[in-house]
Image (cartoon, rainbow, N blue to C red; front, side, top):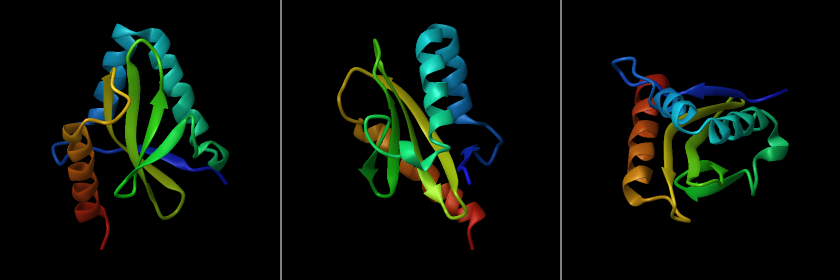
Length: 117
């Protein structure tokens, strides 16, 4: 059984990861294709490890693509073989900026508050 990939939506219905991917597709189609291939691979547990994916703490993980700018999508796992994609970012640094980590954690908390009992 494969994992289901879902995108976090705000209370107002915005989808930040989809917006990130749309911008990436426009600005860098090659990186967009690589990130989309990575998302497809995450459906298989075999790819839940480096170099494609790695834990970053607080039950958050990053999907990684190294290119001109490092493209990353932060996510977490939910019972029932679900993966919730929270935040997309591009940077040259080797680590996630604290502000991006906070955005992902805030979205994770919001998701849990709305969808778990």
